[in-house]
Length: 274
Ligand SMILES: [Fe+2]
Ligand SMILES: [Fe+2]
Image (tube, rainbow, N blue to C red):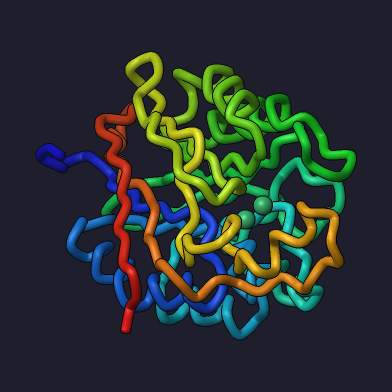
């Protein structure tokens, strides 16, 4: 990556899952953020607490120990109901802007203003294909938010698009190409190898993957996931503690224009952290 005056470097992690995912962040991602010289650190936190939702204790860790600039969420945002108590206090904790059950807890986007970087907007949206609930159109939701950001003079716009299908993610990316600086997918817990820059402006990757145990079915122990597919009695899901991987993205954005200059997929794998 190139000379970085007038640029902002963003380090993004997708869904960080459970205790093992949090450990990978503490023991590897924070150091990596420094090595990369990232100006802003954004994480998806919908699976931080045992794979389902977010507790206040873990949210405090992301805030004070990880120093995340933005914590996105997704369809699992309210699996731990205590989030409804603390979410309204923090502008940088985003709940998907178009989600049916969020109501007035969050506006789904924020603008981070750090002295060195200038304003950078972060938007959290939910796809509708194969997703539960009567969610509003994410394409139109983005258009509305983008108008507000333009009125505020914000050029750098980063979207965490939390969705199931690659087709909806790619369609969304083309819808916002030339406007958003970066769009990346979360939710599937599987990284895709298709990072690129659309219309010489918008960085894109269909899904940036999970940080957590990959000896699993999307993060959950195989023994607890397989019975459901075999039509056998389901077992309670348990997060995997094996094969920790770190999956993320580092992106450079030109501050004056909001144009993505470089995008690089990050993947680190360990067989164990012990
Ligand atoms: Fe997730
Ligand atoms: Fe999700």
